Length: 190
Image 1 (cartoon, helix red, strand yellow):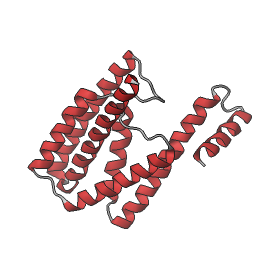
Image 2 (cartoon, helix red, strand yellow; image 1 turned 90 degrees about the vertical axis):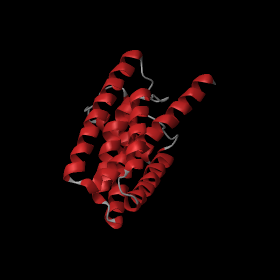
Image 3 (spheres, one colour; image 1 turned 180 degrees about the vertical axis):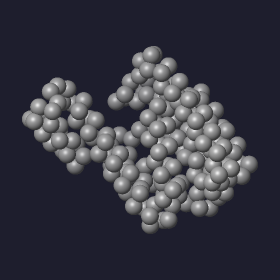
């Protein structure tokens, strides 16, 4: 469905001469936008049902900005990607409700921070990074980590109930980055 819709949209824009070349690049870009939009809409609907709207916003914004530059594990199909994205959100939402920020979550956050600082970025088969991009994305990842941590510190003083949401999101991103590095290491050795 996503591929067919992206194909039709790209075809329509080419027919209207809004885009001229690189059909496959535009089609792939629309696939990513549509897939991410579906996941976001489902998560936002779930967040209303679960009464975790603000945690969902933290999750989605963090994923969008951090994962864009850190990279990490990527599923092979849009269905498994969205299913995993939503399932991870449900688990995250449950954990946000069950736990409060404490010394253990701060330690896990610090470990996640260190892993992302050291390992980011992680490319994947659809987005192979050259040396310049690795350096650029690594620098942006580090800057975003610092900004993220400053926001977390502000939340500590202003809105402490959302600290666990931020901590868990960064921990999830670190886990996906580690899994991505493992996957890419296996692929490169095959």
